[in-house]
Image (cartoon, rainbow, N blue to C red; front, side, top):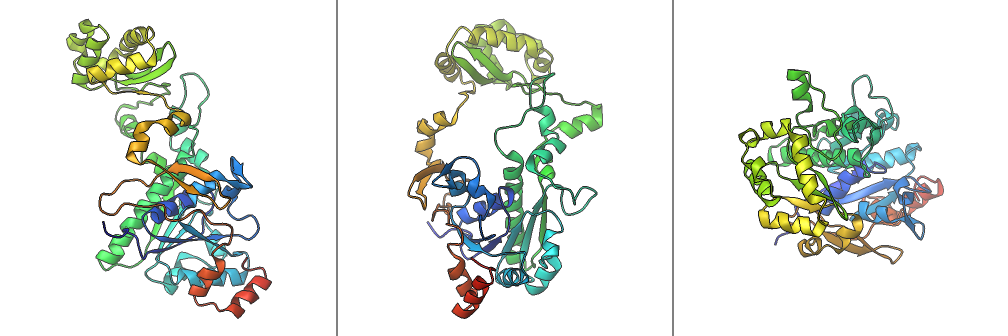
Length: 397
């Protein structure tokens, strides 16, 4: 095994909370040096989100692993000058402020590109850097709504619901990280320069919208909420059991035949109208009723065993407790852990995707606020006297 792919790449992270930091975490997991700029005082608000252990969020421990923390007050001109100096030595700068904020701080793309033509700038925002909504505040929940995801989530006739995770943020972060990798390839393998990646939260979700717009543009069809079902693809749903629900996806033609045999409905399996998905989609309620009647007489384990024997994809609906004790997660190394600064051992998702020759790694715990300020600034060329002056003025902490 050779070194990590992004060894030697320096990333300056100015974002807060989720989208920008998630992109930076992804790069850090594969070897990039990520220098996280945080405001003095409380630092990134994520440090105080959700459940805290000794005053620090355990989510922070997962999101900020492999990073270094430097406290700089970007509201002060000296702090802005300091970030310009660091950006002059960086490969990538990541920010997810409202468009115009970086310009207000003297950190526009034009300024930074003139200082460092090789710099790649990832800009994540609610609506993008241009367009009539670009100056509006935009959180992931709003982006999910604008992209059509919230409209689809929920039961027919009931209020839309959200997923219990910040999908808009993390999906935008993944799009941003992909953009950074593409820009690095263009710069380093094809002799290019730095460039801007403009990643909008709503566009990142919109990119995953599958057939929504093609179907509307051709047929005027508006897909409606369908609960646990997948409209137009049948059968695929959550089905009742004596002790809960189980997911069954019997929507492949051959798989459907095996599923019908397994539930004792070979008559449906032999029906020529149901041989292909378009016919099954027209009779989805009949199929769901047949499968549900069979599953409701069994417990989840019995249904899953029958589906395994028939070669039909099916699965238990996991809680996080199920995830934590599942042997497949452990066998794959999908769960890792690290000891936080407080001393608590924190389990978290491992590094994905898994590369055979250059896998990512969790190299270090999440930093205390400002833990690396002196080391990073000293490496950037600031001596003891300069750092003491900036600290006395409240520019760094």
